[in-house]
Image (cartoon, rainbow, N blue to C red; front, side):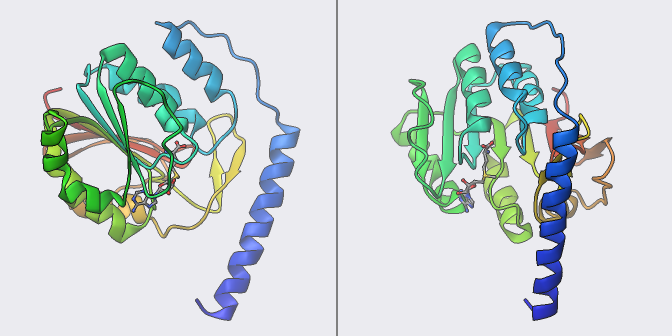
Length: 245
Ligand SMILES: C[S@@+](CC[C@H](N)C(=O)[O-])C[C@H]1O[C@@H](n2cnc3c(N)ncnc32)[C@H](O)[C@@H]1O
């Protein structure tokens, strides 16, 4: 990176950090009244009240996932376990197997008895996934694939290339961070700080679909054998659902 570009990025990051902190301080989260279909949904709602880079999407991930009563869920990218918290509850409700993958050790995140944590690069793991499943007597057909790792274009393209062949015929693929930038806006108007990934994730989806998308707005589209639903806020969440589900 050139020095000028570096300085500009520093100023943008500093400005967006100060802007987000001031805005959020002046606009605290409002209390909301909700009804829930089960205790997991209530737990997830309560977790989602804490502003994070993914909190707006936690209930959506839960509701979208339980709709298809998944047998096998694969989560790429665990970190502190926000998405794992949700997917673990989906798995408990549907008695699914949950496989979580991260290059860092995140083995202490869940104690669900059908949870497998794999510390590996997700592309390397994908290459041996069929054999890994055979050893564990698991059918290598993924119903929910959640992708939230590097957010980089080439890596996301590789994830699509290596993981999509394992999708079942009723699968949903959930991508987080399809609308990234220095300032990430939540549904309640508050901000989170992000970084410019040069549209890495959405660009990889565009290339797969051979279509252009405007990730700044909500949309519903079609792409090959999938229907697409996109939520622009909180870093962006894009869900590809096999047609016919
Ligand atoms: C944005 S965080 C995941 C956040 C998590 N989904 C949540 O909701 O809390 C991204 C994670 O992806 C992991 N990661 C990055 N590149 C990876 C790769 N090539 N293979 C596996 N994990 C990767 C990082 O170690 C990091 O923990």
